[in-house]
Length: 394
Ligand SMILES: [Zn+2]
Image 1: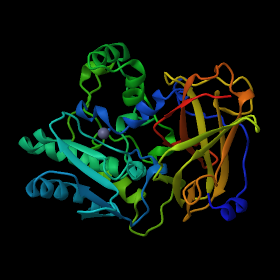
Image 2: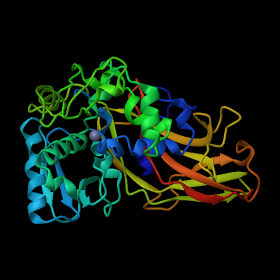
Image 3: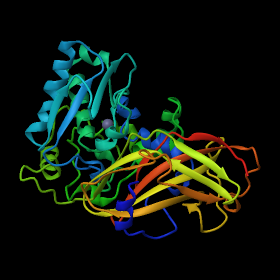
Image 4: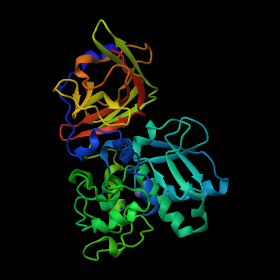
């Protein structure tokens, strides 16, 4: 982190408690799995009026999209469908053939269609796709249309409409768990993918819209009262309204929140320091900020080798119950900073050995770098790294 900038920011509170989501999941690397597939996975089985404002692009932004494969004809079909959003949202897609890109589209024969949610795409390494489409879509024009428009809705930050807090859907949970277990989904996954309901703020004041292109179809057996939703194939009136609220032609978004992108994370260097009596951690990353001013938390968390959080026994070095530490800053928009990049050790985090209970010397642990942002109302997880393995030395 550039030191001069750090001093300008105010450090905020010490104990990081994450609220607002399923707490049970927060102290495990499994959270990452569920989060990863938030905008992914289930689009194969397959919700308007719902968007995660923390992951929106800037109003008027050009979003660079690159195809990793596919024929020219296939690419043209995708471009034509994605472009329909440009009529309602003040963003532009630029179809680029080289880096830098924001969104990368890959086709394969895997029967999965999914996309990263909004600016989460920026956090994916340049050589990996952020949006996946199955080749079989090209044999079914209507399915191609609804799928591509839906996935590019995710690209703009739209979430599933069935996750709306005002949908009132009475899920037949027992049956849903049973059916999805057949596809290898445990209850946590079904909860995260289907039953999870987002805070009311994410509706941006809109109403529940069963016609949304972002709504999964819901066959009647999935609900207790026979409620059902068919296949939506086009951008609904509600979708258009939300698109113009999130990306207004006038350029000024109403519900702005602090938006933080973590880029080019490479690794977290760990150095045991006997003299200091603890471990120094040096996550290497860049960060850019947009939107409103907010508090950003750069954290490292410790897990056992199986990915279970190492329970913290005191209030210090505690991130939501797990052993961890963080530095926090109040950051306004338009910043670009880097940590442990220009110098390998300009942004140290430290945990004393005495605050790492129940980990014997030489035990293998996992260390994960995470970033959270708060707008005062909500603490949002915006980035987590692949965990690195570390052999504990004291
Ligand atoms: Zn989806």
